[in-house]
Image 1: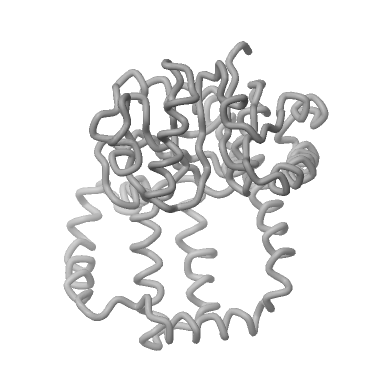
Image 2: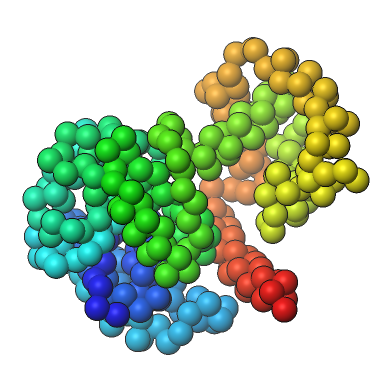
Length: 314
């Protein structure tokens, strides 16, 4: 492939993006002003690729690693690239300064995309001379294992920029969605936030333990949601489809929603109590090992879902 991708920021998300693009055959320039972060990225990316190869989710790591170069200077990393994936901290002031630098260093036709989880493109790029080439491309962590990407244009983002970004994400094996209008938190985090807030409320008010709440999602909702979304789920859960489902259960959900007018449960005392309960099951020192286990399970799930998708097409 002739195109070169720049990934700005060599932290967890930046390294995973580098894997996504290089695994698809693109040359990748991974940039960070932090020399230690750049140095750590080489071993971390190699370890990720070794795990992916073992799971059957990528080719030879050596070939992919050769496509990733590391750069301390922003101007060098961005020279001649067609797409920039920014992976800096969630700080709107910092992002505004960074996108000013990106605009100055990148070629005039390069797309400038941010991995931000909730800051809108209008907020971080609205001050630029050419905001029409800037947007959000928000991944799910880690994007090398979870393919969804939210493509969110700003108020002045051009339609061609959106179309090119959606096409690129499909080319590299991601699953992009087009968020049609800017909204804080986009789609994924608004859905996740609604579930987390209700989960914390149920926990705070003594209806369920932390472990049983996790079981409810892991062994209940999550079983279905791992291969179909909530709309398809309810469409299949009533003989007459979604309208029939709404007729049967809509009044219940409406009544529940009317009860949600108390103090939000994101309070220090609730979270501290939750942390004590979680640490009793899984000590802090075991979290890194558990994250590695999570990634291996995600790899196995990716293989399974890929096989299932192939079967559904035959």
